[in-house]
Length: 113
Length: 116
Image 1: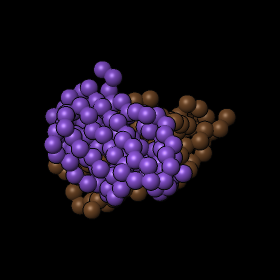
Image 2: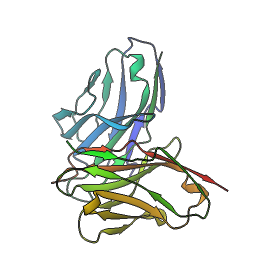
Image 3: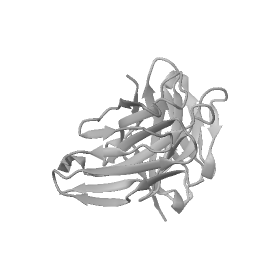
Image 4: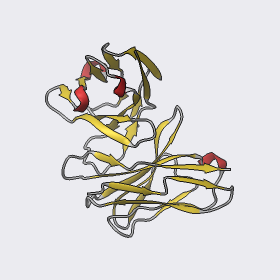
């Protein structure tokens, strides 16, 4: 199993540009989520999904969109990037029936200039 | 809403010394408790978790944590720190009934430095 994969690893955007951060898992996990990590702030939840077709907002959802068309994929879209979205983004998935551990991807470091 | 407090932003310990990282949570019922470690430039890795039962839990890499209901705490310990333990450590809680399909709330993290 590859676990949770994220692409790209690094990205630089100009203010106003759009992009999609990709996240995929091959563990057949129902639950997937996106966090952003900023210095001194820990991890803050952006959006999460409990299954295909079901998404919900977390603590800091503004400026981000998500959709979940398959169990495996949970992309995060920035429609109009802002410097405040400069951060490291982590995707996670977990198994609601088994260990209930959340598995994290390696992260995407995004810089918005 | 539940919250997680890690009072220490940065801790420096000597290699071979013991370590305790503090975590306090704010929630009426006993939450599901986790400790994660993040090495520089890496994702998060689970060290250990507590759901119920024995309040002293063992994890990977020689870490252990003790749940104390009276203090709303879940402190992480290691008897002898190695240089490779230098990393950032996050405490997280899941609200009962935690099924793995609900969000975790993370503390702000404690950065551990290890000196010779």
